[in-house]
Length: 312
Image (tube, rainbow, N blue to C red; front, side, top):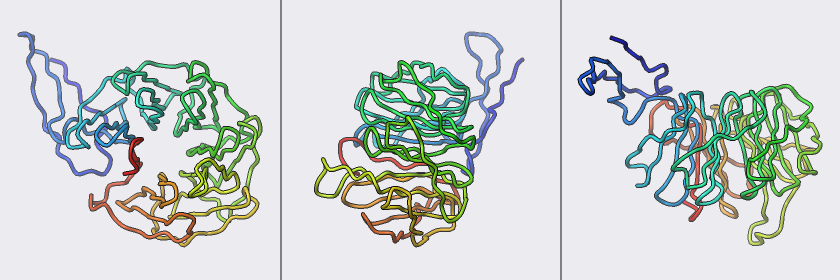
């Protein structure tokens, strides 16, 4: 009788794994299934919503979860992989991408219902990605990896970053102007679609996980601001530049916890997901962040998402 044990429990979430013995088709084969928490208990690394009801979450062991009722219930979807999935990017109501360890890139053309593998050309873990439209996207990962596609991921080109540190965040204001951040205070920006990258020095070389490139001027959505960006990481450090990285201003810290991800509501405010159940809020174009909590306990908040249809 063969027993299979789940290899990874949900990170920092109190849950009890009850073991269920399953006998199917008269064969005395034992299997273990999640009873609590349902539908699974692996760490979740990212989430994204298509609309006000439908969203996805991805995480360890190749897990992909889908909700169609605003998160009241979740169901598992086969990803075809077993490694960590770190980032999901939904570009339109039909097209979406997932990025993970080992250079995994998965693509959906039916709103996330099924996923197919793309060839990334790297075995490095991929931690973050952004798309400007259905065709043009960038992904970053371990060992200074930066990838670019201009054909919806049919092919990915490895760009020369000039660094070997792990890169954890990427954000583009338009097709040419973008920012990348990573470990040991790594901050890079490009003004030529990733053909070349400029390194910048920040006041403290902490590990950076989040970056947001301001891509619109409030009230004038078609106007691109290519000089402004926010970056954040360990110990709640947050900086912003309005001079394309020539100078960095230290924002008033609201939390001592690591900041993992920004989400922006253009012309309104920004919210950041942090470790130890912390969230921080910043009014648009302000440098003062206010801390709050989600009341989930001591769970680390890896991601925060808004849907594509309404800014909620």
